[in-house]
Length: 110
Length: 117
Image (cartoon, rainbow over all chains, first blue to last red):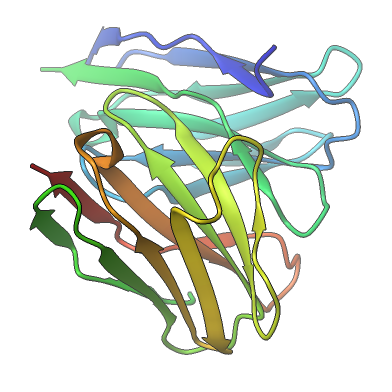
């Protein structure tokens, strides 16, 4: 079983739409959780950390459910510039090793 | 934020040659760096953890004799792909953990695209 699983998409949405991505992780010892964004042929960039209480950053809201080992990302009012692949990332805390999901591709269309 | 650089950004080589990729932390020290590989349309896969002044630790299934890692200073780690073959063609990315709270953010280099002919 993969460490982190995501729906690969693609999600094709119009500008202004709300879109949600989900992710599950297999190791209950995982300690830190993140969403990264990766543009084509570029390195990943941190979008936001995910906290148990849920957290919001502008149009982006992240949720964590430790009991279900489930992480979500909600994007409101999608912009063309949101088109990218969104990576769910889990850190078990041991030496900061990161485990990446395969990514969910988002295409925002005019 | 912290900056990590990689060199070269792109390399094309013949099968059988060795290729060295450098990863540098520009404005902070990194006792640990990580090397990832990403094949097209796939996720980043952690290859190894590079430890300054000691041997790298490799993930299961990664050949340590093929992917040589040297972390000779607090700002430089190198990955050498020895006797490269076409199946080694991939996007190689390094990262280093940040030095500020919460200490678990990773800063990624821009990646090196390797093509082995």
